[in-house]
Length: 261
Length: 321
Image (cartoon, rainbow over all chains, first blue to last red):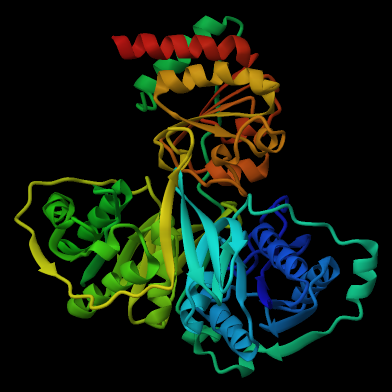
């Protein structure tokens, strides 16, 4: 069973975000880049499926600038068989629909039983690309998957919603977005890292794919401005020498000042 | 400017987050707007939408829509959009909304302003503000070249406002055959009857400072006193002290409650990514250097095992007044 896993290469969460000179993007100096954590669950599940079936390939795809290849190599090192880099040229915010159309084009070129995505990318935090690709390719999808069982020509997925799980059955092929709890992603072994150097990374240019949303003039989401979040007032510290008195003062403030009690 | 608002209901109850989106649409448009309500047995709920801003409600009331299915529910939104021809579509960014919005948008060759915390109009264009990079920055966004503008709104940020209103006009949608390839066969409520953090207005969360699962009763006592949901940091979930359903943070749930009480939580960036937009944050931690104090509204530096029981007591006393 063949899987296509779309990954996003995003700033590490420890990174301190600074606004870049153009006021619309982040300052990339000192940023450490990682494969988005939810995409790791997606890749791991695709690898497990391949191992369980004893056959099939796992292809990883990333739409991004040059550094995306490093992320793809990490996935190859963990066991993906081949990779496709869609070169977005520069680093500016890319409309989710453009990313989705690029991935859909790659998906249509292969024969995949599973299209895997993270439930969101922790860069733009949009949760859009996976379901968009499913719509563009004409597949059913299940989002927020925390458990997957593969049957004969169908799957049963546990989808996490507020306060419950939906148990969803779907025919194949299917698109899925991975939520934490789906599995424990493996680390790349030394052998995997060495072997990854020999695996192919295909390349194509986003600008040559005929996607209007990939150009600034055609984008259907535009970042006008990027700012740090509104600052919070300094913390009001309540002296705690007397826990009972501190507690009463806290409750008084919550009631009278914050008006939340 | 015409708005269409997607209304989520489960088991006959309309999600408050949908009423928030509906009220927002009315505020932006200056008058009643259109809504679409898919489900089974939902026709009776349509008039409840009037006070929150609906002038016309497109109802898709079918057996096949008894539980959520992407194909049927997106189909209903689609059918309503064909009749109403809106300029903008608003959907609450709940699990269902985040499932519906991107497929609907892609079908119409547009994109989505996702999980907005602010929304205004410039002329007839939506301009929103959304958290990015795990909440460490905010992007001001608009729909660029898109003709149809689609946006999802973060729950519990915009007020749901009921006003005395005129009657609602109901328009019944004809969806034809619904033949989904992905079907919900069962809904398993969480084993605990607990209020989910994603739904809660008040959350009490425990972190490493509770020292072990034996520390939960102290936290739960305050949870009960406040009528809150129980949250947890990643550290205690990974340590096996509580189920992942409670985890708040970058790889847990992102919440925006009115009151968030962090007990023995240091406030790592990944945790802040999940709760940093809470209206009021209370931090109780014995480490005065804990980063949580940088985002907290109120803080108490001290032993949570001494302080929290007193807070629970004071809350109960205040509520009894």
